[in-house]
Image (cartoon, rainbow, N blue to C red; front, side, top):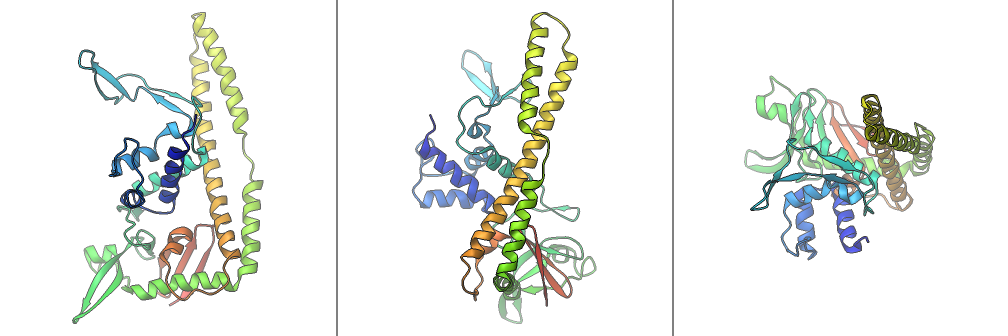
Length: 323
């Protein structure tokens, strides 16, 4: 039976991670709300959050033999690094989160782990809403926030990381005052407000395009897999060779995984479009102040050019603003 309290905590963690929060931010939020860990502790560790984000048990699957016993007297177990075989069992029990949500989180974990600016690898940051979102059009590197002291005048600015590290000879991208960058996001949302009706039509069309995109049926793949597994079992019991069947099963499992990833991407895209639609329906007044929550929820990327800013939304479109 599903533990609804546990399910609610897991869904919250997955949702906040997809909204852009870091592991430490999620942990601190849970602690602030007085939510206890599975072992009844008040302190949440980022390692625990990370494990929860990649725990296949939450979708009803199970990976067997993650650890194995090395000393049967002391019952000592160690992590299985491939010394003994592991077995992945699908639908072994009732899940507490949808598989598409799980796949979206896996995709985001890979994105953060492999965050690159050009050929350089950068560490994902969520200290500020604009962290890891602003990019240089010249070298492809990330813009970072810097406390600026210009002749005794203190301010916050954003600068291309390549220029910060290697100087203007490596990249001569200009320094952007934080207020200018923040106002670009305000302008972006207000432009959506001004063209609200036409934008809602575009978003509705985008959702239909996603829904109309058809691919190979996951049900058909699963049916074929089940049939092949029965055939393999018969051959194994009668001591016949089943190498060809095993290869077919492996290929089908890989195809199934690809379909699940593609489905998760489509569902994630539909979700982002639907969320922006809902926001626009309730968007009654132009905004006058920078809003970090709006950035985290709807903006995917901001690219800085010599003469403009390009603001890319998670719903799959972008707007340009002259400097």
